[in-house]
Length: 409
Image (tube, rainbow, N blue to C red; front, side, top):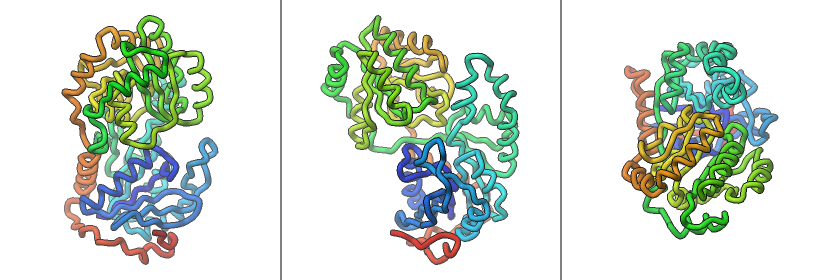
């Protein structure tokens, strides 16, 4: 099967989406499929990423809010690219204009909309949740649900990575929504990587002794992640029980969060750790992973923490709570600083060591390979009567002309 992922949020400089795309390119070949990532770029080009794997770009303007990213703006050019690529299945990873464009394409391929983002949770619920119920917010944003229902009718499958999002979509009339959980990279995260020396060193850097609790937060430093709330809650909790926080990441809110952290003596902010094994050692050595964002569609860091045998302190909305092991961590009311502060205090009072032991016993998590096996099987199942040829040893470039550009290796 030839799959084309119309991927609006792919950029070589990106984070989670790029990691997911790289894993998908590798997995597709192993399962006998061709995979082509079609993304907006500075120019039209095609880059080979191995047998049967390409990243193709068509020109698109930069996003004003984050100039690392571009967006699809030329629908005829997108349609010409899809015509040239002749996919068996088209996957779209954004519910906005790229999905509308792909939905209007006249090709015969089956189609899926993958909900890699949850716009209402990231923005509307966060902005208005303190003054209105979620039901009222949904009514205020009926235009979005109407848009999503229309999209749902043009796609054969709507993929969600967590059960809460699937349930919300179905409740709003998107009947084709299904849950296909993601997974973690195998062989990287493990309880065996725990280092008491690293834990003590991290606590020492925060001015704390080995008897303190070490919390780790990992993610993009942006407003929807609510790291300011996390920092303030840790600071308040630390006034009663010794607790430290290491926050790992980068993003537009970094400068503000660094100013805030300077006022909180047991909070430190680190640049992103690019070495995955080094990051895995830090996660495994923490007493808990803490997270503030209720808009996560899968929450890879929470899954990686679970694979590391680490308890979680996570909100009750969004995907992070799917990864909580009962008895190993706590869930708090999303968006409520006081609830998070109380959860931190309760976690420390219950004893981090016992909770880590419980988490370690349930650290076998779904792998990214299992995710793609599930996902591709569902794509295959959309057209069971159609016969697919196995992916060729090398995807022939000439058929991509002239809609795209010469292949670059």
